[in-house]
Image (cartoon, rainbow, N blue to C red; front, side, top):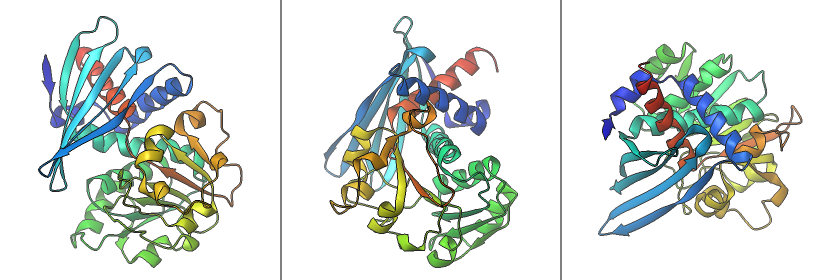
Length: 305
């Protein structure tokens, strides 16, 4: 069985290809043609083992992502199987896949929930995920500027991001970042809200992707209350894991407010219906994403791409 490294993943697929295969996977899931396994976490002695998976017959793959968390550091592996004959196809270092798929799904959500004329991006967190989100959003939307709020960022991060995105980037505080932002991405490890939801301008879209833990949150109740739509990857997993939603006051969330990404991409839900509406996407990361992207890498390698 072949083992595929992060370097090979990066050399084999582009963010745009990742977006396309993930869109296809969520369309299949939205039509009931794919299935997922929820994340299971097991912990002892400060070491956490997590597993999640998916079956996507239309893409001819099934698989599972397994990873450890030790002192806040993650090590990921994906195992990929064929749904045609059940063969084990490959194992993957899943760092690159995790980085690519999270931002790609945020872009898919943004295309249904952000205003087409979005020009300003506020980015909370300039780590691996934050940087990839900036790059993919800058390609998906005609951004004029990116404002980064990250108290731990290196002094050179603005210059580095500007070179990667081709858009002016500057570091600033939380209030200045959110001010007049069309798209807000929260990619932090914060345990408490990063900004006041009242600061979001009408028409803003927020992608909150920094945490999949039920005791941490990046958004406050005001942001949730103001949202016309809150998109999630998969309700059973998100409503159990997403602290942004789990910790919300009981009266804040409305059942009709929460919609799955599969419903958006198949047209079962209309998405944004008003230019002044605030819309949210809360990601926790689901197995469908990892398996679909691993399958794409495998297929392209087999084709000699």
